[in-house]
Every structure is written in C-alpha cells, then in structure tokens.
Length: 153
Image (cartoon, rainbow, N blue to C red):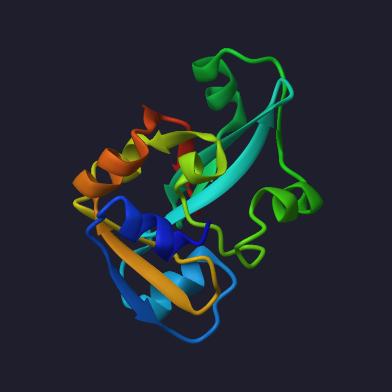
C-alpha cells in the first residue's frame, strides 16, 4: 500500500512537500529547512532473526550495544539492501517512511526524537517529505520508546 493512501485511509493529519532529490536524512533536513533533530530516520535492523524498525533523528547514530540490552537480544545487524527492497517494495530504496507497522515491523523510537513536537520524514520517494505532529505519529505507529542512539560528531 502506498504511504499517502495509508495515511488518508487512517485519517492521518500530515503535510506533504516536494524538494530536490535527497539521499540522506541530513540532506533532506537541509532541503526542508528543518533541524536534523526533527527529521525521523528509519533504520531497519535484524535482531535475533527478527526485523524491526528503529527511528532516530537524522543527526544521530544507533548504539547497538544499548539497543541489544533494551530489547533483550544477542545479535543485532543492519538489514541488507536486498532485504529492504523486498520489505519496502512500494518505496524508493532509502526513502522508506518511519512507519514500521505499515510493513509489519515493530517500531522502536529513540527518546531524543520522541521529545520533539513534530517530525519530518521521507514520503516513499527521494523528492517528497511528510511533516507530522509527534502526537499524530504516536497515534498511528504506537512505537516503543527507548534510548538507543547518540549524536554524530
């Protein structure tokens, strides 16, 4: 199911904007003129043979040791691009939205992003951004809030 179709089906409140092609969350932050701490970057992980979506600010990285401890697993790795292409067939690779439940993935949201009043994220393409109030995002996704990332230097 296409992202906009899903958002409309569940009566989500959101805004869409178009921008030049971006291939990283930090590039999108610059194009959209928003701080990186407001851009939700989805990262799909494989933890003990299960896939999960981690959502963190564009300007942060995952602390895999902290994540392993908090979700109670032994092994954590990034999903392969080929796995991502299958999971997110309706999205351009690298432009996946941070709404794991659309794709059957439990979503972990980092607490640093959970504190923001709104988020901006890729809308399934490299040229489309979605802006959504954090309260609305929480209503749609019901993520599990953890502390698993740290700021880029």
